[in-house]
Length: 89
Image 1 (cartoon, one colour):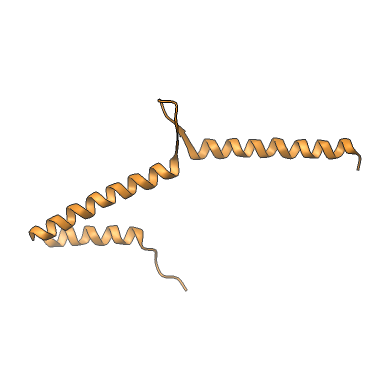
Image 2 (image 1 turned 30 degrees about the horizontal axis):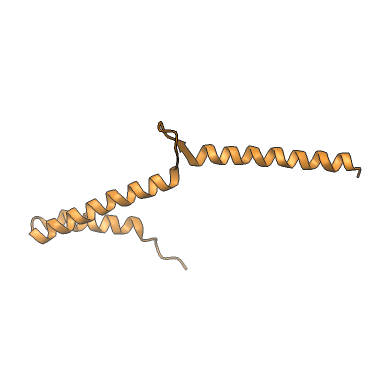
């Protein structure tokens, strides 16, 4: 193998690597109107967590007031079921 062939293979690897990095950045980051970049995964996780915490706090408050406990217990069970994985062997 000559040195030109080795350089050519190295250049091909660098091009494919930079292309995959661009694809990864395009799939995982959002560009905001303010010019900053946000990670899609983090935005999705923290928005789900915030909404879940709001529902949990609201359900616990309603259970404390003892008004129609069936609905609020099912809401709490649903939120718990979303976060706890099914057991596996």
